[in-house]
Length: 274
Image (cartoon, rainbow, N blue to C red; front, side):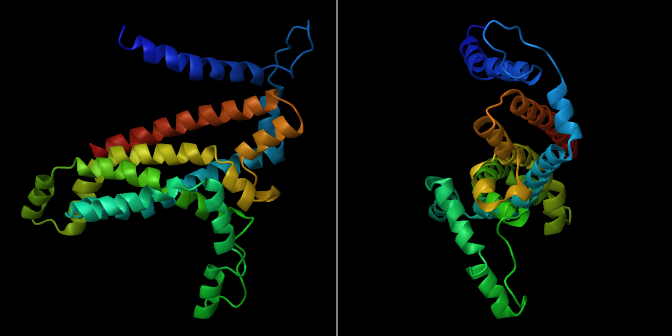
């Protein structure tokens, strides 16, 4: 108990107490004047779930978070598998550095870079027009597509590092045993490598999902009023309207929904890996 006490106190002071404070804000009317007692209410949650505008923002936030997580996993798994399979330590170290190197650049700079790449006259549209895939520039900015693409790139390092850590722990003799039982490479991957890397899949998915839910810079720069996400809504409510209780309700819903969804997801993946 003495050994875990410092960490427990640290987490309680920096996470639990502020979380309870946010929860209390979410069930009271806007800050009362000096000397007035707070009035407790659930109107903010009713407003969040009944008004189409706010309901669509929450739905869009979770949809983009799911899409970014799934696409990120599909993109990152081959990269992580390739890094682990390379035997040359220098090449492996170089690839790991190449994966994490975008973290050395500000997310604002990277987002502005995506604004250039995905613009109507950017390299992506020009290349597709050169191939004859499209006749006119395809709009990829200020919509969900542009936000999703940029967020996938931003969070690739977190997913790759989580997967590399998990895949490295897999005993190579297990794959050799599967091969000796006449399993081909695809069967070995599906029945040995993929299930045993489930902890890395869970860890990376949790990180990417939570980070996407709280994304602010990328949705602001690459999105629009029609693609507003929860973090932007919270900013607008606090700094634009100077209210606290409704943003606190949005934050509480995000937290509770995320914990429930990740608990279900984690159980499914753990059963699959058994």
